[in-house]
Image 1 (cartoon, rainbow, N blue to C red):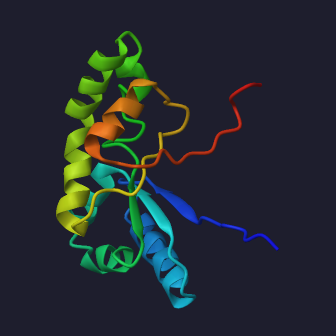
Image 2 (image 1 turned 60 degrees about the vertical axis):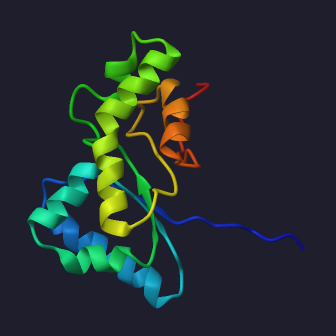
Length: 150
């Protein structure tokens, strides 16, 4: 019988609502209590907001899981797709690095690890991201969408 691989991943993008911090912590704790390691794709500003709010308890709960990257500001305009739309492949990859490196570096600083994956915010896909992820040493593009090929 073949094995089934299940990934529990969470997009952690709400840096406005303080209550979302508690929900994030609880999800991490529920998975840990069941010996399940999740993937938490963090927006850079969410992580910095946790630090400003001194939510070390949330950060500590996340340390038992994989941390992915979900852009620096998620859906704040211009989004990834918006700021890369008129750029070539290499030019756009360099622009992505310029715009997104801060969030990746924050994850490295706080969790002492390179993000395990990247997930686009909503439909903000851009081809230049693939080259940038390689340069950032982020090994996996993790996303799910149902609006392609419709």
